[in-house]
Image (cartoon, rainbow, N blue to C red):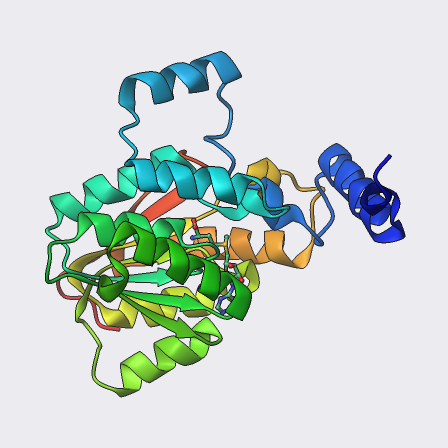
Length: 258
Ligand SMILES: C[S@@+](CC[C@H](N)C(=O)[O-])C[C@H]1O[C@@H](n2cnc3c(N)ncnc32)[C@H](O)[C@@H]1O
């Protein structure tokens, strides 16, 4: 066997992955097993869904295949989610969007490919390595000029945007970064979105763990609390769509008092 695959680190990774898949409890890598595809569909039905609906541009397919080879590749949104987001952007005539959590660039690329020529995606990613990979793909796709990437903790980037008078200038935001900060991202995004604009919040079903009372880790509890808060929030109208790992769509009401 190749010595790389016998290294202690590799063995620890495999063991952790094994226990995570069995118990779905470990906070270590659970982000990586969330959004491979829409939850609850048998593989043959999922394949059928894709076969009769997915129209993924070749560059996105290439990026998705490259991302699938990364150990945390399943952090990426599912392709049917990307296409759904593209449709939403077209429906609301979006020109300016926020992408909170970039990873290797798929969701930002979906947005950049969908927005009109004068559209702009403001993207937030704290990891330099991921940011560099994402930039490469955006250049390959010929849309890097439409993406304004901020490599920093997303809370800081969003705070900066609010401080520099960008409130109510965005049409759409996708929240898909660290789950423990989702509530802050939601509050900041709600300020940045125009009345009538949309926020999409990913992983709200968290592979079903939000509905399992035995799961009491910090991130699951925070997601539960946010889901309950959104349900009661009079500043928005909403729909929780069971696509991918659960995507809540939030529309800021016209007279929202944020
Ligand atoms: C689920 S992945 C995003 C996937 C991406 N939306 C896609 O579909 O291609 C989450 C990303 O958020 C980034 N992230 C985590 N915490 C962050 C933070 N505090 N600020 C900015 N980015 C963060 C991670 O480095 C990771 O790349």
